[in-house]
Length: 283
Ligand code: GUN
View: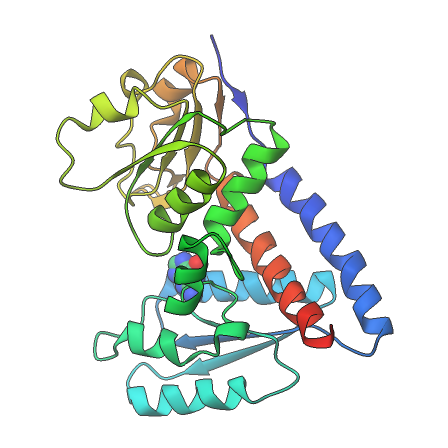
């Protein structure tokens, strides 16, 4: 059997077109949704992500402001920038690109972002709301994965869902969203004993470890839906996921490619979160 490919690029185009329509309606009410992206330092991958986020905003009609700060600025200075953005009425969403330089406390920076502008959904208040079933902002990557599952009509109700990787950005919120959708969720981490025994039970398997090719076909239940959140660059410069696509696609029922899978959805959901923050500001 050969898995069908879940086309994240096509779905993200649909989501972004819907955002563009809603942006126009909001502009008629005199409000242009605005996203501020703060980039500290020179991390090459972060520079690419930030550029892509700003370009996607412009294309959908949102206003974007990229604030580039030197890698050696003090945390106090970054917090001051965040507070200014909190008070700026033209800005509805604030995103501080991670990772931050090591001399900064990322948790403190995130907690300084106004919770109602935290379009990443990383603030403890938004994490708590998600955990208690009253989400305000869902973190963009897991939110995008949920959209993909919905669009593929993959039912989570009563399903076995396994998440590999327990980060605050992806794994933990992913588990919460699938739990809320009725799945029995197993959240694995780097200490999990016999990972394959866990992954083989999954009807829906989400892999977000940052380790290229760590999930192989023999770890997958035949017919399962496999979502690969990883974006890794090989020494040859090729982009690969955390799932070994070659072997996994022979066993899975559905699978996301890298690139063209989860990546484009993350940006699309950032636009959705920013638009909805702006909509809430007028309602
Ligand atoms: N770095 C990697 N992914 C993300 C993300 O979703 N948001 C932010 N702010 N930084 C990131």
